[in-house]
Structures are given as C-alpha cells and as structure tokens.
Image 1 (cartoon, rainbow, N blue to C red):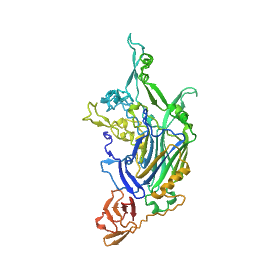
Image 2: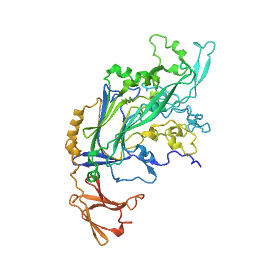
Image 3: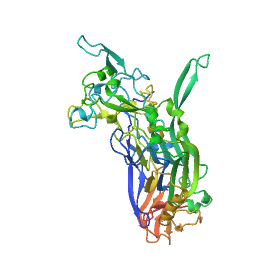
Image 4: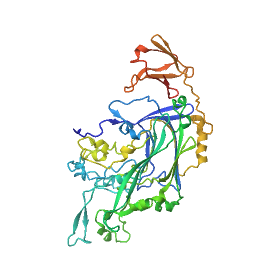
Length: 551
C-alpha cells in the first residue's frame, strides 16, 4: 500500500561546531552543515571567479575525517548523509546548486502522471518578478509569470488595421535534466574514515545519432542521454601506515589538492569558442520567444534612436557540445600531503553555466562552490500555497515536481517521475573537520603543491612522505585497572586534560554516556554502566578534539 505523499517529513539539519586549537587555530567540525556560495550571477555584472580558466584551476583544503561523533540530532531530524548515504563525506562541489524549480507549468498535469493535478495550479499567472512592481529596477525584466506558460500567442500580421491574426502555440515543460548535465562535479571520501579513498563524481551529457531506417542516410534520429560516473582511487590516503592501528586509530589532518589541467592553453577568445559555452549559448529577442517576432520590424524598434528591443541569453546543451568534447579534455590530479596520489587522464572539463531559463529566475543558483559538502539541490525549496496578496500570513508548500524519484517512490505519487538528479547524487556533507580553503585560477605545479605543504605540515602535523613515519606525537597510554566492581582509568599523556567517556553496549543502540568533563584518574563503577563491559570504551579528549579507544 502506497504511503500518502507528504513531502520531506523530517527537518534536515546543517549543523557546524566551531573549534580552536593552539597550532591549528580556528576550524569547524561539520555535522551535516557545509559552506556554499556563488561566484558569478548569470546575466548580471558580478563575478569573483571565472567559469573557465585559461589552462585549468586548482582547489586546496585541509580536512580531518571524524571517527567518532560528539553530537547527535533528534529523532525528528535527519541529515543529507542519512538520506543519501552514497553521497556521504562529500567535501567539495563545483557547478549549479540546483535545477530550475520553475521548469514546469503552474497548472495542468505532467506527462508522467496525468492523474496528478499540480499543487501550483493556484499560482498560474500569479507570481511575478520584482521589476513588475518596481519601475526603478532597470537591470532585470518584468516577468508576468515565473512558471512556464502553457501557450504563447503568435501574431502574424504586421499591422492590425484590419484585425490581427493570432495563433496559440503550445509551450511544453522544460527538462530540468539539461540544467544539471555537464554542470556538476564533486569530491568525496570513500570507505573507512580512518583510511579512506578519494572519489570524483560527475553527471555528464551524452548522446549521438542512431539509424532507425533501412539505409544509413535515412531514419537518423539524435538521442540524448546522461551518465553518472564515479572515479575512485585504488589507494587509501594513509596507505603507508595501513598496518599501524596505533596511527590509524587517531584522527589526522591531511592536505588535499585537486588540480584540473586542460590539454591546451586557451586565450580569452578561445575560452568561449573552443569547446566553450558559445556553442550552447544564444541571444534571442524577447518578442521572438513570445511568438511575436513580427513586431521587431515595426515601430518603435524601426525608428532611429529608439530603445532597442530586449534580448535575453539562453543556454541549452546540443549536439555541437558533444562534437567539441576533445577541446575540453585534460587531466585531473589529486595530491595528498604534497604527493601525487591519483590521476584521471582524459577527464572532461566541467564548465559551470547558467540554467535554461531567464536570469531573473536563477539568481544565486548556478556557478556555485560547496566546501565541506556538496549541495542540497531543491530539497529545501518551497513555493506558495496560494496567491499572496500581502507579506503577512504567507503559507508555503513543497512542490512534488521539484523532488527526485527517490522521494516520490513508494508514496501516493509514485507514478510521478521527475528528472531531478542533483539532490540524490550530490546532496551530502563531510563528516569531520575543515580548515583553510583556497582556489586558484591556474593548475598548480608539483613544486607549488609541495611549497604549500611545507608551510602547513608543522602546525597540522601532516604525514610527510619525504620522511615517512607512522609514529605519532600523541600516545594513547590510557590504562584501566580493575578493583572489585570498579575500573580505575589513568593516563600520563592526557593528565590534566578533560574528557567525556562513552560506552556502546550494543552496536545497534545509541552510545551510553558514562561521564562528561572528567579528568584522570577516574574511577568508574561497572554496575552503573548497562551491559558492561564486553565492548569498547571511547575517551573524547576535549582539548585535543580527538577520540581514543580503550578496549
């Protein structure tokens, strides 16, 4: 029996805990949260990072994967990693934050489910852009309806002295898949957080011509498709110390550099025309898109000195983009602590681009960077329940057509299918600590990567491959001595430091808090700990922000 659809029923939390230490300084522990922002506004004069660089780009950051959580959300809450476990430990994202949430008509029914009446039907012709009510807005246009119109009205006569001939032209829903393809890239860790691998994920545009007739020159149709590709390293980041449990049982900072380098250097003109956005970008007259191109050859546009007709930029993938793929190929290199760790040759460049809609409906959506996570996509998007008449008493709802099939499946709307792919493939966050983020408009060379590593290795105690050692400055010397029903815990290494002590009575149950903010030596009565003591104890040393295991 299908569950009645009710949207995302749990609150998704994006928590960040601030920390400081003597050597590292300020950093953040991520518990579902991450940093996210745009570096360019489509159609507006704002850009802090180019969407395409002359030879490539680099991103560098310091990470520390967490082995044991210290904070937990409530039963009515969830995180992106719990909803999409295949995306957990995503720590970098580059591309569009989400698809266009106004891609469909406000009224009617989608093709996939004719029995579903859109919840946005009441909003048809209701929501307008700011320029419609504020004539002082000159950098954007007035859109009378932010949702796609069902039809366009086309005029065929040049003059209307004898009456105008008008035709209603159907306007199909747009496909949000074309917003996400070749517009998304993420980096994440895979496997045991003590010693994980590094993975790269992309959602790529594919396609080609297929012969459907009996002759190779007839019956040719062009088909489009997509692939979600994961590239994962064969090695782990601490492979040299993989046999040392003492080293792996402690959380370690590591410096990761991701360097994308194109096979060819392009100057400013080449960036647009050689495999760039020129092949998928067009300028259209607004009147032409509205089916009223004939007005462009009438007054006032034909009068000298008059304001020129409005034009808008439209971006949409096509076959030419695929033909020019070779001009976007290069290598993606991953460095760990100054050592070349993983190389992907023949990697296709991801060029962030605007969405296939008006600029007024995509402010802050494309051209995004996520640090410490990927992107939530349209998971948090809301729309109005009814046409608003004032700023007070507004009520909101979730639009099922902005949700992925993973959310709709098994509910009363399971027949409804969408092409929302960003959320289920890139919604995730890093479980651990982050510190220092840099992004460069050029591919860093090996000496430059090593230079940065040498500067940082001391304060962050980074593993040095030039002088490898699996010993650690902090020795876990916690011992426990039984005395009747008590266990006396002591440590010289952590003497004078405060700790929280936890115990897992069963792997399938939440941990039991034995004590918090204590110091060594500490006497624990085993009778006060449920199901004690066949499993592991965990000491979280507060000053070090580290968890140590006692078995």
